[in-house]
Image 1 (tube, rainbow, N blue to C red):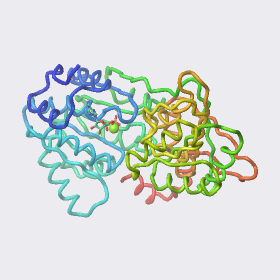
Image 2 (image 1 turned 135 degrees about the horizontal axis):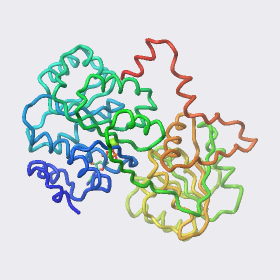
Image 3 (image 1 turned 180 degrees about the vertical axis):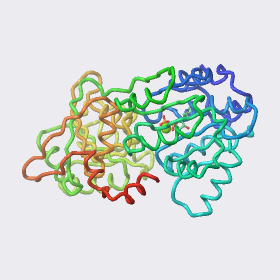
Image 4 (image 1 turned 90 degrees about the vertical axis):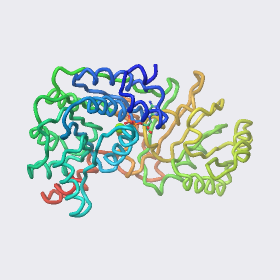
Length: 403
Ligand code: ADP
Ligand code: MG
């Protein structure tokens, strides 16, 4: 199907076209009609599936057909980066419309607060805000929310992880009861469902099935300190006579460093990254396919799509940024119903990110103990880490929450 079939306002369709949006993604296909009907909605789909447009388009469309010009929609998001990013997408979609919007987040100086205040008083159509900053404004009493029609909670799971539950409820206490509430999340842990039960009315639910790792992959992870990673590679690579091994890292710099270290160890290793010319990349790939090269080190440019037979081991030198990348990376092994092994190295800083991948694919990935000669790695405890960092001094706590 195409976006035309939603019968959106002409000006909005022009915006979509300008942004190169042609076909809706599955979450958009399912969510847009429900939101256009005015129903409450809880929608779960993993990162990168187009959730932003799924709620922005029907909400903008509604605003184009309403009377009045006070605040119509508030989008609550966990971070300022996300607020800015959503505001940019919104500007793209609404380029040919008279829709006004503002992103409101912590930090900045007094003048940014005053600018936000002015926009909130006059009533921008759409407000995109982090919880703490929005509450500061709401408490001062000038935010024109009487005619609000839409509340959207984006990345709801992350907001709860960051401890924003009470703030969200406080925000809701300021808003009219008679409104449409939309909750978007990448995962659906029980606490999200509980929140939904509390704040949604007679809601619909959409869950887009997450991709799963291929059947034949044995995947496991090591909790390691950064300094232990190279030694661990040497151990894993040396343990068996494996013909073809891929090592992924998300940065080009790491890829080059790993390649150098492996070559120093006299291993047959080469690398592929974006600094190479196309013909150089092809040459490396050819050697790897022909088994003249045992170890290929690569950034994510290789994780999607490239089909190489008989890769027996995939090593994630660092945790990929999202679950899709994880699945693509480990999917390089165990192709066509063969078996393969994939190991991920989790350093302390990556623990939270790894936990999110486990949440997304819905399984806990087995953690393997480091071999004794490498020593102990850090304890894998993604939640505790955060608690330990945060000092339980009330002022500090607030500051961190109210970003
Ligand atoms: P999510 O919120 O689910 O993580 P986003 O809404 O940020 O995903 O979308 C991810 C990327 O996909 C963005 O760059 C967005 O512009 C793009 N995108 C979303 N929907 C479409 C579409 N229908 N056609 C083309 N690109 C799209
Ligand atoms: Mg999103």
